[in-house]
Amino acid sequence: MRDHFHLTVGMYATSKLPPELLRKPHTLGNTFGHLQNAYAMYFNKKYRTVSGLFEKSYERKEITSAQYFRHLVVYHHRNPVKHGAVTDFRYYRWTSYQEYSNPQVESFIDVDLGFQKFGGRQAFFAAHQTDVPLARMLDTDLEFTG
Image (cartoon, rainbow, N blue to C red; front, top):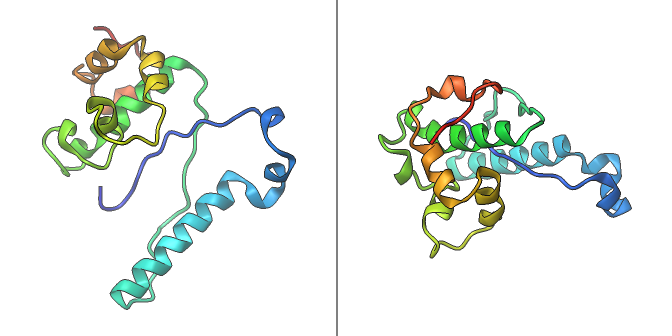
């Protein structure tokens, strides 16, 4: 998608983190701020412009259940269709769906953990084929069947 991105990020419990990562400058908000600033500098240099690229900072929502995690992953994978980037989400190259569907693709995500959260590989792909509207996927009471 040309104007936004979605990420699902897992975090370790603070008790498992080294003390240097618990300092305030290393918060998730600061990290995304640095990411956005670095990209804006790259973009402005490449296209010889000085404008701001991002209208607002990132939004975040805590994933409080495995069910909501599943909905979010499917929403992220199907979202490019909603925005007209592709007609079939399975062929959009900028989502992790490619990593789940093609074992030959080098992955930087834990595909096995993703499959596990869905109850297996078959359930993962079945959840993506549901006709549930994208807006309803963010309803945490919604249950996938299939």
